[in-house]
Amino acid sequence: MEVLLDTHVVLWYITGNSNLSSKAREIIDTKSELFFSIASLWEISLKLNIGKLHLTSSFDEILTRLNFIGVEILPIKIEDTKTYIKLPLLPKHRDPFDRILVAQAMNHSLNLVSADAKFDAYPIQRVWE
Image (cartoon, rainbow, N blue to C red; front, side, top):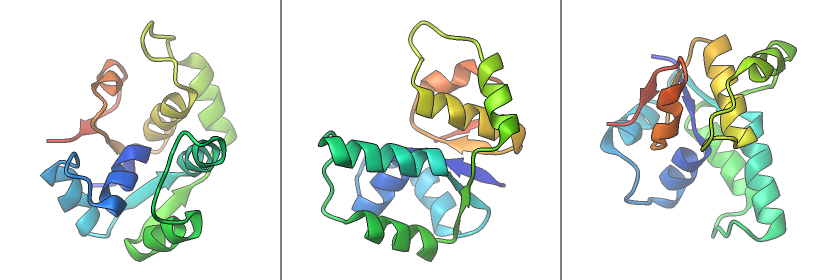
């Protein structure tokens, strides 16, 4: 199963956070068919920069760990932006980082590994439990 990992999933995995589901941990531990969006890397760097995210690992360490678990970084393509525009603006889900993940999951036929049930409103498969 090819999967796109949500930002928090990777952060929880790297930090050993107990909120990570056993299914998500199992998927990552397989070290195969894992994708992580460049948008998620941007989100992490942005939040680190403005002080909204605090980690004991450096940004470079995160990149090293992504490489270790065999993650492929998924670029944002023009088709992803076109799909993004067509997504419905849901009242309680306007996060641009989440919405580009939806577009990428749709365009690349990827299941999205995320604890966020808001993704269930979109035509993608979310994996958590």
